[in-house]
Amino acid sequence: MVKVAFIGLGEAGMAFAPADTPSRGYDLKLDAAATRAPKLADFAAAGVAPADSNAAAVADAPLILSLVTADQALAAARETARSIAAGALYCDMNSVAPDTKRAAATRIEAAGGRYADVAVMAPVNPARHATPLLVGGPHAAGAADALRALGFTKVELVDGPVGAASAIKMIRSVMVKGIEALSAECFLAAHAAGVSEAVIASLDASWPGADWRRRADYNLDRMLVHGLRRAAEMEEVVKTLDALGTGAAMTRGTVERQRAIGARRLPSPDGLEAKAALILAQKADAV
Image (cartoon, rainbow, N blue to C red):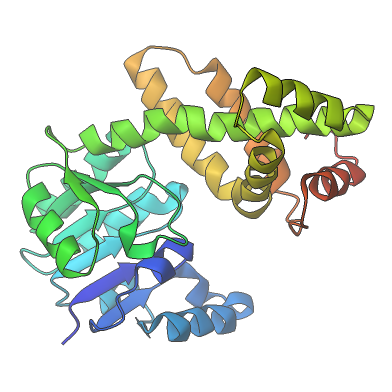
């Protein structure tokens, strides 16, 4: 009997797949001829049985983990609501705004499911089941127990309604993804001007121990590999900030920078200078 269903099996889904728990999943990439075979290989590697539809994946599953891109989070909840079993736990682990989570919760709860707002608070690799999770909403305690039973070791409850955990994640991302975007803007310019070493030395002197070469190299890697996904998440951050009325000018810039680099679909070579050279060599109108 399947004990957990995955909606979306990307990097996070593969990292979170339990080795010893019967699981089943569905991903939109199974629907396209060009991406079906590679995605089936991902399912096999993760030990998750593939389903040919959302309905087939979630049928009778007592626990559902939604791990899709931010722009698909609400659509995934709507589709899951058509087939979710009564009383099933729906853990929305997507990086979206509190309002988006509340809209998804309305769909799931109306269909008889139990919705939990789950925020993934750090990169899923290499931590996997040790990735910190925040869980909120009226079914948070039950969801936390279910996640711990799957092997998650850093699950923390958040007081408040659906959206409280998501708010922490979204507001944190202003800084985390914003620093990535600033790193790109700074170090691409430094490379173009031929002053990378001097800039790194100056930054390291101002922030002892920060190791800006390593940090900027990592930040550019994240943008090259996940820029499009990060841009979609940051659009949800803009929604969060706009709803709060606190302003989102810097975050809107982060969306543009993340998308501009991610859209190039470039490899991520070793080293900061190699990454900067590769990005600048594309001669795009905006980086």
